[in-house]
Amino acid sequence: MKYQNKKEYFFPLGLLMVILIFIFDYFGLSVYLENFIGEVVKPVRVSSNQLVDSFEKPFFIMKRSINSARKVQMLENRYSEVLAQLSDLDELEKENQYLKNLLENSDRQARDIIITSPVVSHVGPSIGVGKKDGVEVGDLIFVAQTLVGQVSEVNDNYSRLHLVFQKDFVPLVAETSDGIKGLIKGDGKRVIFTEVISEDKPVLESRINTVGQVGVEQGLFIGQIGKEISQPSDSVKTYGVSQYIDFYQANLVEIYK
Image (cartoon, rainbow, N blue to C red; front, side):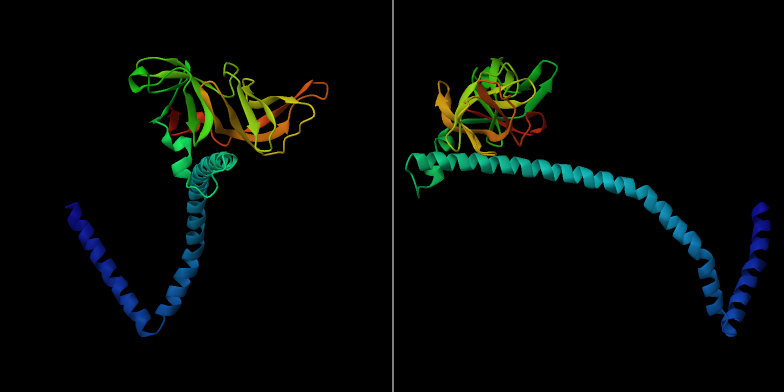
């Protein structure tokens, strides 16, 4: 019954609308009607567009920020890889192997490499491989061909690490690309290049490589020289070390055997 009443109500209304449209169109008034409706609807349309933009803008900014952060991380990893490759080329030049193919002459390419993922837990930095995978205490850990740590404890299926910036990391003898020697160690917050004699002054952003010692081969890339952080009264100089990668944000790490 209710449906029948609605039908009887809408039919004459619809018929009236058709007649009005026909009359407006016949006398050429439809254009004016369209313009009038457009002017009435325009503020509503503008307001709705502004409202939609105000809702979309934060999401757009957040998405762009996430994408930018990912691109920056990729660029930093690639830059670190390039610096490590430059260190390889320096070593090849020192060995008088100019014009020889890097892949045929680099000791790094001949190594066995274990690839795994970093594990971050309450017990400290770890990796998901252990004795069963051939990992041993003292194995060096790399991200983007940059030395970031060393295996300190090995279990069957996982291993614990000391990262370069930690105080427990065993200091390494290193040398800058301009020939200045010192020790690489951590102060708990950052990587430092210390025990540099006061007469030496390394060039800012010069590359730092290992010089070779028991269990650590020569020419492994560590980072770049940063600003001096020692005091004028100190007997030796200490510099910060820039590393463009982060173990905690890495997707993959490598173990050189």
